[in-house]
Image (cartoon, helix red, strand yellow):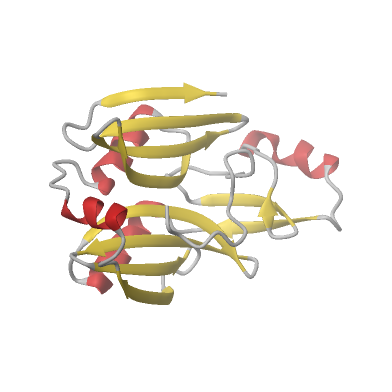
Length: 199
Protein backbone atom coordinates (compact mmCIF):
# COMPACT_ATOMS: atom_id res chain seq x y z
CA UNK A 1 0.00 0.00 0.00
CA UNK A 2 1.54 3.24 -1.10
CA UNK A 3 0.12 5.38 1.65
CA UNK A 4 2.36 7.56 3.75
CA UNK A 5 3.24 5.68 6.91
CA UNK A 6 3.56 8.53 9.45
CA UNK A 7 2.14 7.35 12.75
CA UNK A 8 -0.05 4.59 11.34
CA UNK A 9 -2.60 3.13 13.70
CA UNK A 10 -1.88 -0.59 14.02
CA UNK A 11 -4.44 -3.29 14.69
CA UNK A 12 -3.29 -3.49 18.28
CA UNK A 13 -3.51 0.24 18.78
CA UNK A 14 -7.01 1.32 17.82
CA UNK A 15 -9.44 2.23 20.58
CA UNK A 16 -12.95 3.34 19.72
CA UNK A 17 -16.17 3.98 21.59
CA UNK A 18 -19.75 4.35 20.42
CA UNK A 19 -21.80 2.94 17.56
CA UNK A 20 -21.09 3.18 13.86
CA UNK A 21 -18.18 2.13 11.70
CA UNK A 22 -15.26 4.32 12.63
CA UNK A 23 -16.93 7.01 14.71
CA UNK A 24 -16.03 7.00 18.39
CA UNK A 25 -13.19 7.88 20.74
CA UNK A 26 -9.53 6.86 20.65
CA UNK A 27 -7.51 6.63 23.82
CA UNK A 28 -4.23 8.03 22.60
CA UNK A 29 -0.71 8.02 23.98
CA UNK A 30 1.65 10.53 22.38
CA UNK A 31 -0.65 10.71 19.36
CA UNK A 32 -1.05 6.95 18.89
CA UNK A 33 -3.96 4.96 20.22
CA UNK A 34 -2.65 2.21 22.44
CA UNK A 35 -5.59 0.49 24.09
CA UNK A 36 -9.04 -0.78 23.20
CA UNK A 37 -12.00 0.23 25.30
CA UNK A 38 -15.78 0.10 25.22
CA UNK A 39 -18.31 2.55 26.58
CA UNK A 40 -18.98 0.27 29.56
CA UNK A 41 -15.30 0.14 30.53
CA UNK A 42 -14.49 3.82 30.13
CA UNK A 43 -14.48 4.59 33.86
CA UNK A 44 -12.17 1.75 34.84
CA UNK A 45 -9.95 2.51 31.89
CA UNK A 46 -9.60 6.11 33.00
CA UNK A 47 -8.64 5.04 36.49
CA UNK A 48 -5.92 2.72 35.23
CA UNK A 49 -4.36 5.27 32.94
CA UNK A 50 -2.14 8.19 33.91
CA UNK A 51 -3.80 11.41 32.82
CA UNK A 52 -0.49 13.00 31.93
CA UNK A 53 0.28 10.17 29.48
CA UNK A 54 -3.17 9.64 27.96
CA UNK A 55 -5.48 11.85 25.98
CA UNK A 56 -8.76 11.29 24.22
CA UNK A 57 -9.10 11.88 20.50
CA UNK A 58 -12.68 11.99 19.34
CA UNK A 59 -13.52 10.65 15.90
CA UNK A 60 -16.85 11.84 14.52
CA UNK A 61 -16.66 10.80 10.85
CA UNK A 62 -16.70 7.17 9.75
CA UNK A 63 -14.61 5.74 6.94
CA UNK A 64 -17.48 5.30 4.48
CA UNK A 65 -18.39 8.99 4.74
CA UNK A 66 -14.77 10.05 4.28
CA UNK A 67 -14.50 7.91 1.15
CA UNK A 68 -17.61 9.56 -0.33
CA UNK A 69 -16.03 12.96 0.29
CA UNK A 70 -12.81 11.94 -1.43
CA UNK A 71 -14.63 10.45 -4.42
CA UNK A 72 -16.69 13.59 -4.83
CA UNK A 73 -13.52 15.67 -4.93
CA UNK A 74 -11.75 13.25 -7.28
CA UNK A 75 -14.75 13.21 -9.66
CA UNK A 76 -13.60 9.91 -11.16
CA UNK A 77 -11.49 6.90 -10.31
CA UNK A 78 -11.52 3.81 -8.12
CA UNK A 79 -10.86 3.78 -4.38
CA UNK A 80 -8.21 1.14 -3.68
CA UNK A 81 -7.19 1.93 -0.12
CA UNK A 82 -8.31 3.80 2.98
CA UNK A 83 -6.53 4.01 6.30
CA UNK A 84 -7.09 5.83 9.57
CA UNK A 85 -3.93 7.58 10.75
CA UNK A 86 -2.75 10.36 13.03
CA UNK A 87 -1.20 13.40 11.38
CA UNK A 88 0.18 15.93 13.85
CA UNK A 89 -2.02 14.43 16.57
CA UNK A 90 -5.11 14.77 14.37
CA UNK A 91 -6.97 11.66 13.19
CA UNK A 92 -7.36 11.60 9.41
CA UNK A 93 -8.45 9.11 6.80
CA UNK A 94 -5.87 8.74 4.07
CA UNK A 95 -7.65 7.62 0.92
CA UNK A 96 -6.04 6.44 -2.30
CA UNK A 97 -7.87 6.62 -5.61
CA UNK A 98 -6.55 5.32 -8.93
CA UNK A 99 -7.81 6.93 -12.12
CA UNK A 100 -6.15 5.52 -15.24
CA UNK A 101 -2.46 6.31 -14.92
CA UNK A 102 -3.02 8.82 -12.11
CA UNK A 103 -2.93 8.24 -8.37
CA UNK A 104 -4.91 10.64 -6.20
CA UNK A 105 -4.51 10.79 -2.45
CA UNK A 106 -6.78 12.63 -0.05
CA UNK A 107 -6.54 13.22 3.67
CA UNK A 108 -9.94 13.69 5.25
CA UNK A 109 -10.18 15.03 8.79
CA UNK A 110 -11.89 12.34 10.89
CA UNK A 111 -13.62 14.99 13.01
CA UNK A 112 -14.76 17.61 10.52
CA UNK A 113 -15.07 15.46 7.41
CA UNK A 114 -13.19 18.06 5.39
CA UNK A 115 -10.30 17.40 3.03
CA UNK A 116 -7.16 18.80 4.62
CA UNK A 117 -4.61 17.68 2.05
CA UNK A 118 -4.49 16.14 -1.42
CA UNK A 119 -1.96 15.14 -4.03
CA UNK A 120 -1.78 13.54 -7.47
CA UNK A 121 0.98 11.75 -9.29
CA UNK A 122 1.45 9.68 -12.42
CA UNK A 123 1.84 5.93 -12.00
CA UNK A 124 2.93 5.11 -15.56
CA UNK A 125 5.95 3.21 -14.26
CA UNK A 126 4.19 1.56 -11.33
CA UNK A 127 3.06 -1.82 -12.63
CA UNK A 128 1.29 -2.83 -9.41
CA UNK A 129 -0.84 0.29 -9.26
CA UNK A 130 -1.57 0.15 -12.99
CA UNK A 131 -2.80 -3.40 -12.56
CA UNK A 132 -5.14 -2.35 -9.78
CA UNK A 133 -6.30 0.66 -11.77
CA UNK A 134 -7.21 -1.49 -14.76
CA UNK A 135 -8.96 -4.21 -12.77
CA UNK A 136 -12.63 -4.67 -13.56
CA UNK A 137 -13.85 -5.29 -10.02
CA UNK A 138 -17.52 -6.07 -9.55
CA UNK A 139 -17.40 -5.21 -5.85
CA UNK A 140 -16.32 -1.72 -4.82
CA UNK A 141 -14.30 -0.87 -1.73
CA UNK A 142 -17.43 0.73 -0.26
CA UNK A 143 -19.33 -2.53 -0.85
CA UNK A 144 -16.58 -4.47 0.92
CA UNK A 145 -16.79 -2.12 3.90
CA UNK A 146 -20.56 -2.64 4.06
CA UNK A 147 -20.06 -6.40 3.99
CA UNK A 148 -17.57 -6.23 6.85
CA UNK A 149 -19.90 -4.01 8.87
CA UNK A 150 -22.75 -6.47 8.41
CA UNK A 151 -20.64 -9.33 9.71
CA UNK A 152 -18.99 -7.42 12.55
CA UNK A 153 -21.51 -4.77 13.51
CA UNK A 154 -19.75 -3.72 16.71
CA UNK A 155 -16.23 -3.67 15.24
CA UNK A 156 -14.44 -0.60 13.90
CA UNK A 157 -12.74 -0.62 10.51
CA UNK A 158 -9.44 1.23 10.37
CA UNK A 159 -7.83 -0.08 7.19
CA UNK A 160 -9.06 -1.38 3.82
CA UNK A 161 -6.93 -2.19 0.79
CA UNK A 162 -7.50 -3.68 -2.65
CA UNK A 163 -4.76 -6.11 -3.55
CA UNK A 164 -3.96 -9.20 -5.59
CA UNK A 165 -3.84 -12.49 -3.72
CA UNK A 166 -3.05 -15.72 -5.57
CA UNK A 167 -3.92 -14.01 -8.83
CA UNK A 168 -7.32 -12.79 -7.60
CA UNK A 169 -8.45 -9.32 -6.55
CA UNK A 170 -9.46 -9.10 -2.89
CA UNK A 171 -10.09 -6.48 -0.25
CA UNK A 172 -8.09 -6.90 2.94
CA UNK A 173 -9.98 -5.30 5.80
CA UNK A 174 -8.65 -4.78 9.32
CA UNK A 175 -10.99 -4.17 12.22
CA UNK A 176 -10.87 -3.96 15.99
CA UNK A 177 -13.58 -4.96 18.45
CA UNK A 178 -12.61 -4.29 22.06
CA UNK A 179 -9.48 -6.40 22.56
CA UNK A 180 -10.14 -8.55 19.49
CA UNK A 181 -8.29 -7.85 16.26
CA UNK A 182 -9.91 -9.04 13.05
CA UNK A 183 -8.59 -9.51 9.53
CA UNK A 184 -11.18 -10.10 6.85
CA UNK A 185 -10.46 -10.86 3.19
CA UNK A 186 -13.34 -10.29 0.76
CA UNK A 187 -13.45 -11.19 -2.93
CA UNK A 188 -13.57 -8.16 -5.25
CA UNK A 189 -15.41 -10.33 -7.79
CA UNK A 190 -18.45 -11.57 -5.87
CA UNK A 191 -18.19 -10.14 -2.33
CA UNK A 192 -17.73 -13.53 -0.71
CA UNK A 193 -15.53 -13.92 2.36
CA UNK A 194 -12.29 -15.57 1.30
CA UNK A 195 -10.79 -15.81 4.78
CA UNK A 196 -11.02 -14.32 8.24
CA UNK A 197 -8.92 -14.48 11.34
CA UNK A 198 -9.07 -13.06 14.84
CA UNK A 199 -6.53 -12.70 17.61
